[in-house]
Length: 404
Image (tube, rainbow, N blue to C red; front, side):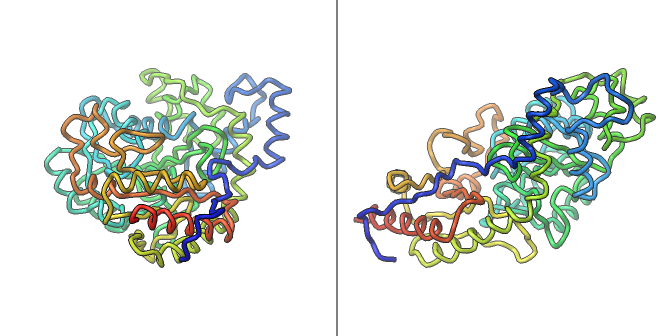
């Protein structure tokens, strides 16, 4: 790619989200006019809140029996763990390539994260999973489909069954994605999705648990803060299930608000179109970056039907100082990249050795080595072919600069 520093600029603001659909804005205003923003209330029988409607539609979209809205995906992960039987002092397996709220949810549940290595393609190392499960005595795997990278779910499910592991899926980056035609979020006992601004649906903040388990769903609804108004939960189990838990389940007040749900609801219909735009940009960038010497792209399985909201690549031949300079040059040209190899946690990115509260169980040298050279490029739906070409040109220029 030709080196041309003059005027070479990336012109798309990668931090700018898509606008909220007018339908969602109108409904939010309508709700604010009524003041009824709380998802539960003393309403007419049969009247469903926006949060309850969102849960109903999420469950239907994924083919799951139940859905529970929460105030964040991290809260959803915590409640899924707690409601599946994780207790104080338990060990919970988690793949080392993930974001801080995932081990944070394990700690929140009073459990101890046990970090499992990842392969070169950023998916879970199944042999290390088996080894760590046997060594730690863990009975739960919290599997993060980090940045949309989906592990071999046929093998994951098989290993979990053999090892007696309960599988909880972190699907913050895979709403609308699937493995071999089966949606992510439908492989484990429960799965958690994100409604945070930079995810596939933007309500500012929010999360959703999906499950087919009556007892897990009832407990999660009560833990989330339904009080005794759980009958207003359209995507929940029969009232008889709640009788087992209503007196012995604490209220953690982690509910999704009706206002956030109102913003999210009309975006469900946009998922396929948004995914199509992001995937087209992902494939363009993949082709362009594949022609640049020194860039190592991540291999993806043909069974992985992902949503390309970001693209990762490695710079394995560069030192930490060179990568830092590369990131700085890209930033100067308007292209903000994330780098997982920084010595300190920065922004949203971190790696297991930086989770100091996890103590010795965060040791994952193979994962640390991979992440030390891993860069991350966000792909918003608004990215165009021109933006892809600009981004690749900036990356190529920056790599040439650090070699001079």
